[in-house]
Length: 239
Figure (tube, rainbow, N blue to C red):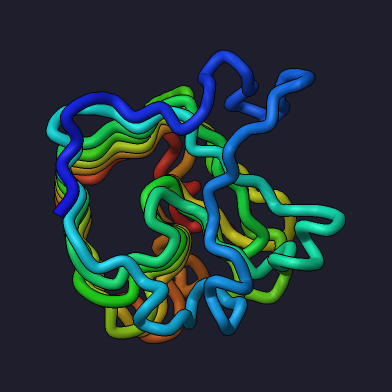
């Protein structure tokens, strides 16, 4: 159980352009990721149990600033894998909760799955009263193979048998795909799983795709209540 008693600053918030990920000359930001070596299998969606977070994060009304991750290059890419990492506050979330937290001044990018809160959820996860504000950016979905990559404002991929609930949550940041993958305001994609959104919103991008592509396979077991977005309803059905 983790409870914040103050804001957390992972990086200097004035040393990075959080919209583009551009770093000021001379500054070396702390990267936030799960490596291929740590993961064992090198694929964020299917890590061993020892690599998945099980627990509770109580933000206690505070914020995390400066989460920074972008796909690696050169020696680091060879060692850790360019597209073998998933990025998020909790890269792989097995079971537990996050509550009463704000994510600010963060740049989170991955070639696989990416979300400000979690790249992948695999079991029962509850996210309550969490805001990703306008200073945060989520970029991802390099792979053109559907189901192998996705970006979501909160969660990239809700994996099979997972039961994930978002209540009173909002995404007001920037979200874009960097390749052929898929991206949505709250949930990137889901497969053979269940999720619920209660009183949630997203700005600039629909919360999820209601077509068989955005929530694909047998992943349509979801419930929405008081969920809204700033985009036109027609965009909810495009990919």
